[in-house]
Length: 78
Image 1 (tube, helix red, strand yellow):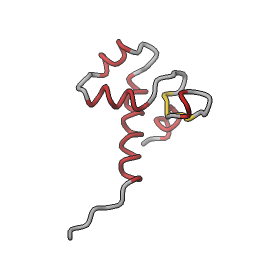
Image 2 (spheres, one colour):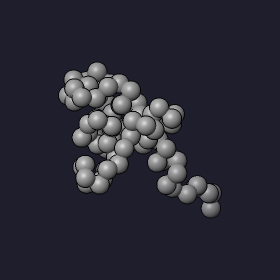
Image 3 (tube, helix red, strand yellow):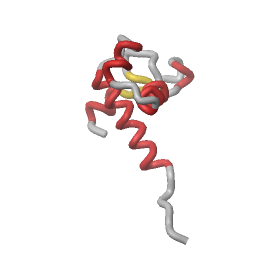
């Protein structure tokens, strides 16, 4: 995740119950990741959520990838 992408993702306890959102919106990262998982394109997501940008969508994806790397221990062969 780049520094610019990191700056786009914020957590504020007074916005969306502290869930990670894209800066300047009330759109949660989880909503964006769900949309991507359902096969929506960046253009479709922006059409659905006009306050988002393609950069915000990419930042949300990078944030999700970072969490997936950091939160789970490595799997070892038994």
